[in-house]
Image 1 (cartoon, helix red, strand yellow):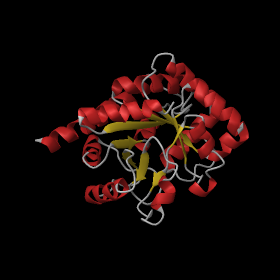
Image 2 (cartoon, rainbow, N blue to C red):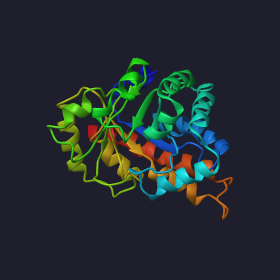
Image 3 (cartoon, rainbow, N blue to C red):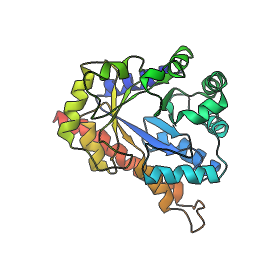
Length: 279
C-alpha cells in the first residue's frame, strides 16, 4: 500500500533529512542474487527501493540499466518473478516502501486488473511507468490509485508551468524529478538548478520531490540531498553489480557487498547533507 511511502517520508521529515532511494533491476544478474540484494538494501541505508522490471526496450534508460535488463531477461526474469521477489522481501520487511519501475508493455501483457491484484498482494507500494503520459491515466494510473497503489510521475527540466499541473494531477507518493535532459546515468546536475526546479515543483504540489539521474557518489548524493526530499541512485548501483560479475556474466562473492558498500556510502552522504546545512 502507498501508506508505506507516506509514512516513510513523514519519518524522514521528522528526522530533518532527505531519503535515499535505491534502484536495482529485478533478476540482475539472477533471481537469487537480486533477492539477496533487495533484502540487504534497507540495512545498508536505503529508505525506499525502486525495483526495475526488466524490459527488452528500456528507452528512457542508459547503457548500464539497459545492460542490467538484458542480463535479467537472459536469466529468465519475468514480471511474475518480480512480484514473487517483492513477496519474499515482505516476509522479512513490512516497512520499506517498494516501487516498481519500468514500462507499460509487460503490465499490459500480464493484464492490468490481474497485475494490480497481484502487486497489492505481494506488497508493492507504487509504480513508475515511464511511457504512460497523463493523457493515458485511464489505462493504469487511475486503476492503480483505486487499488491503493501510488502512481509516481516523472517531471523533467522541460516540464514547464503549463504542463506541470497535468503531470501532477493524479500523481501520488512522491514526484520524481529527472534532473537532467537525457537518459539515466547522465552527468551530475547543477545543484542550484535542482534547487530552483524543486522549489518550482513544490509551488504546484505538497508531495515530496525525489531527484535522480546522474548521482554516482556520496558527494553527489550530499549535494542533491540539500535540495530535495530524496535522492535517487540507480545506474551506479547496477554498474556496481556488473563490475563484480565473472567473464561469463555470473555473480561472484563480491556482488552483494559491492552494492551494499556503495549504498552505505551514498546513505552517509545523504544523511550528512542536512547536518551540514543546519550548522
